[in-house]
Image 1 (cartoon, rainbow, N blue to C red):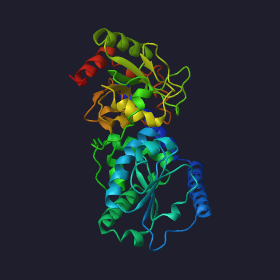
Image 2: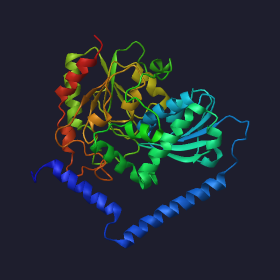
Image 3: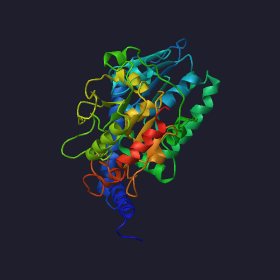
Image 4: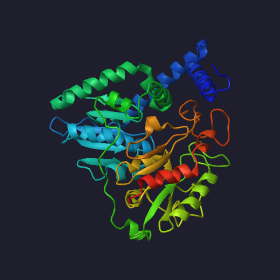
Length: 394
């Protein structure tokens, strides 16, 4: 055993975190966790009963609530589950809530019998089926007698119920235990959608052929109509604190600049378009700098019109799965095996990569205390250029 191995150090750090979470050898800590779980359950029940308007009447269509608490990438991943349930419950009315209503509108707004909820003022008790979905699915309310009218959905409901029961307390609070579930799935050799499929009771493809519509006038709005371009995204998001320390998933700025020089030397006729939220760093090498200038609704058209997209593992990569564009994805703490899509060029980091969920703040700080995180440093600009060349249309 190599005591200097980053892999060993990460595993030791992970177990330290797990032991702290369980509160082993401390009745006080265990009691505090038990009280916290009870309090959250009690307050949620109180909140849901206070907001309740009334269950659907006998003659009403089935009502289904999808509560998607994550960011854009998580909502894109959950779209597979929504599509699968929609196929099984074609006449049901689907209400969808995410903290990012623009993302929900982009992903689900045009679907039949679908309503996007703008605020979290709903009660799961008003639905025949209400669920949360992120890394896993958790049923919040089920009306089995109403759902039994759709015979094809009954086995799904039963499989999902048994699967969720098998995970026990790990599903009590999705916000707290998602990292534990994700790390568990990753360590056993699984991939991103296996736990979502297991707890949802349906088979979900890791790679999808469903395409999102793209607004026809978006490229003209940004001066890109008729322009050959590729898009790139620095890997930061509005949900991350970006100060002196870059998020661990971000490719080093110096590597980006090296890539821009190599790319422009080889493809001077192809423009560089930078996408990103308002806190993304701006690169002067971009021919079209759209950082902070786009709405969520603009993203499908901008990605669909691109010859290729370059990114770290971010929400835009998951969105691009539903569009006719291939991506070059630079992986660091995230795992290419766990999260990579078959149509993309997935560039895995060196031996220090794959530490996602090892610590609570792994996306902001390297678990080993390194700054910058050494994993993304291993991916060279020449490697990214070679990957872009492999996917550019010939």
